[in-house]
Amino acid sequence: MSDAFSGLDFVGAYGTMPTVSRSNIVKSSSDSFTRTESIPLHVQLSDILREKVYSREWTPGRRIPSEHELMDSFDLSRGTVRRAIKSLVDEGLLTQVRGSGTFVAEAGISHPAGERPISFAASLHEQGKDFVTHVLVKQRLAAPPEVVSMLELRPGDQVMYLRRVRTVNGEPIMCQEGWNSLRECPGLFDVDFTKEPAFDAVEHCAGRKIKSSRMRYVARVAGKEHGDYLG
Image (tube, rainbow, N blue to C red; front, side):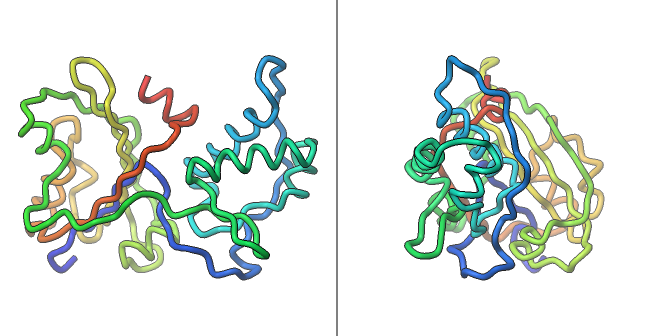
């Protein structure tokens, strides 16, 4: 781990601008949805596509199915598909490259956290805010290819995926999702994250101090799944 943070935290989708090749095209599947008469079709489709980005089914830098493929998959008109895609482009979830297609965009503003890395928990404490951490998902699994690349892991390395919601005065204020290397942080999976911040747990499990960190911030439409988490 050297002296760097061995985890990846995000609320949106991260990645790089795409290099176009056949291998990084998201294959279209036989998608369908139950149409709701009270909601415009382009809104229903944009909700479905947004969840594909948020769930990481469509990862950053990947080219999404073409307009024709989406028209065929969802049995919708070109105008409806175009309006759905445009809404996600306007939100910053997708980016269009002339002559190449539409890609899942890199999200957020990234910057070093400075000489004194600080966790969100510590930041809330410094602001005098009492908070409660709710662990929604904690899984041990082989690192997905994107996480292998971003955390400089070996293929097959075990990681912990953690999803938490923080509440202040009973109101949810933040949903955090993160990946951490279990090779670099033995014992991390056994930590009670309702009581100990992940930042502190990484330090004590790795036996090293976090020297530097990099944070990404983004404001986005929550989408149905994350909207449910945040009330």
